[in-house]
Length: 94
Image (cartoon, rainbow, N blue to C red):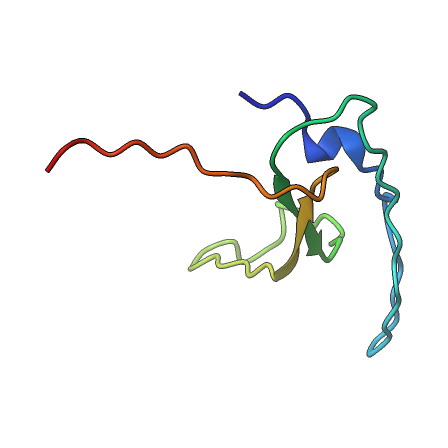
């Protein structure tokens, strides 16, 4: 069962403004839990463009309505111990 969740431990800023062809380094604070845990927490940060809402009553509403959304996901893996996790695997007799 999940004891700690990454979305509870990370506090990203709400909106980051970028101009065309601009790059920025963004730091996202991570508050580690006070109690130690075994293993790893894995998740990701999903980065998308914020689009303004369009009027749904726009003329010419017939036809195919395809809306593309592009996103970028950055993986995050967190551990608070340097000890490797030993697998607990038990095989049945063959």
